[in-house]
Image 1 (spheres, helix red, strand yellow):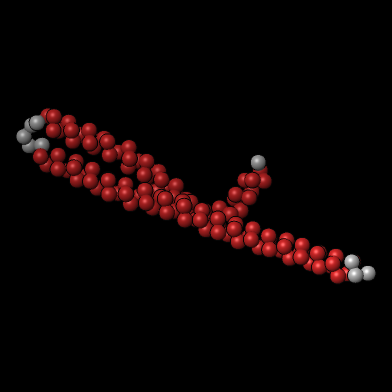
Image 2: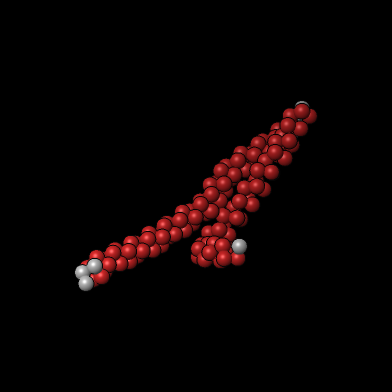
Length: 123
């Protein structure tokens, strides 16, 4: 378990600021998602009250809801970019390292086969 954690930290450490930003924006996403229904409740209560003079409060709540919805789109997009983009970079780095090691193994295998074919079998 500890070796897997070391392996994970080896690659994620270089992108720690990306992941920190992603977590911050993820928390903001949750906060915005929880806040919007509260303003919808207040707006519905204003409509149900039906009193004159609540128009400015109603318009204010509607603008806040729209602003939070637009903010939610932005914050959710940024959280996904900041979390998934470094993961793709790590994946590319891992694939490159694996390909390099596989290539070295094949080179060693070919050298061994050539050695056996020409030097050992030839004697």
